[in-house]
Amino acid sequence: MTQRTSIQAIWLFGVIAAALVAVGLIQSWSLALTILNYCLIAAIMSLGLNVQWGYAGLFNVGLMGFAALGGIAGVLVSMKPVAPAWEAGGSGIGLALLVLVVTVVAAVMAHRRLRKGPMRRNAMIAIIVVGFFTFRAVFDPAVEAIESVNPAQTGFLGGLGLPIVFAWVVGGLLAASVAWVIGKITLGLRSDYLAIATLGISEIIIAVLKNEEWLTRGVKNVNGLPRPVPYEIDLQAATWVQDWAARLGVSVQDFSSIYVKLLYAGMAIALLALLMWLAQTALRSPWGRMMRAIRDNEAAAEAMGKHVTGRHLQVFVLGSAIVGLAGAMMTTMDGQFTPTSYNPLRFTFLIWVMVIVGGSGNNLGSILGGFLIWFFWVEAEPIGHWLLSTVTSGMDPNHPWREQLLDSAAHMRLITMGLILLITLRFRPRGLLPESAQRARSGH
Image (tube, rainbow, N blue to C red):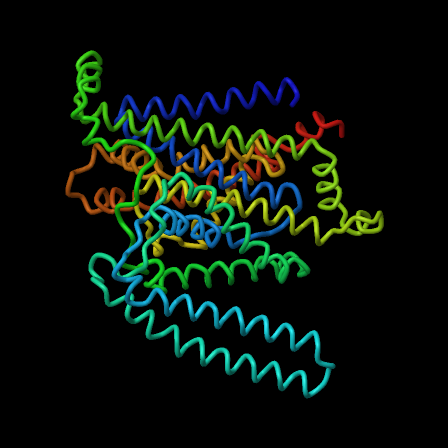
């Protein structure tokens, strides 16, 4: 990174730090740390997208599907198994999955061993039809039995009862596995078709998570996920917490809340630093130079003997794994899994804005974009309300124009995002921290 770009990065991150300090002083330190934690998760998500778009030019619009897979990993790993549900339908689910595997294997074997023609086609159709109806005959009663077990509290199988930090790894692996399957199908498509395919598959993933209550509780949500940090109520009873709260002149409740959020921030910062180091190492390696060569000119790279589709699959899987990991982190911090909160169009657009504003192809730029955009996404409404209140302070409190303007403060989020994007594209079309600085460092 050149000296000028380094100074710009320090200055821009300093502005964000000052903004967070201002939130702490004006609103509350607990809110400032909450924003910081979600900014860190947003930075990890934008880093995952930058690996796909900035390294290889893959137009992925299905980010929320992979984030949702990370979220369900938190449930499947950390929640305790529901013993009555397993007794009611666990064996039926296992048998149904076995029927599904046997059907797929039989169809593949028929396709490989039989000659092309009507016989192979009819055999595969027969295998798939018989397998489907057998699967449903076993699966449906098992699902009905599981969902009828105390549906107000459980109604699903639960998880493995392991520490939720393991879910971060599992979330990344689960997203990577699904990305591999999706990539094998879609990465041969043109970029616009790839975008449509990934968006459609993302919608399918989220629809499954909303409707398969035996696995995710669906729209009933899963609450009370275990935490990797202590609970505030437990900290408040500790003598050392009471002593430190007295020394700092704050309430025990505020100190415990700030302490927990600092622990979350420390874990997220450590993980972001590790991912940043890995991403930078990969970018400067021969593999990274090859990926940029493929992105800039696929035809020339393929003529030089590079397996373009295979490399695209690699980078698609890696980026999706990072997004899945971030999704698991978000569920951990929320303490609940809410399938309806995964809005593909809105939040996928937000992550794309992070990468574009920060600087496509620049890992540090994508992290900067994650911090900047998420901060304004949260603070745009209170800032807008304060601004409109100041502008209309001379008007009668009950004036219809004033009431209308103050009510419209809730829409400041979308207006702010549009303004930031337009201003950036007009004056810094390559982003606040453009890629050229990284290329200079890697010898290009």
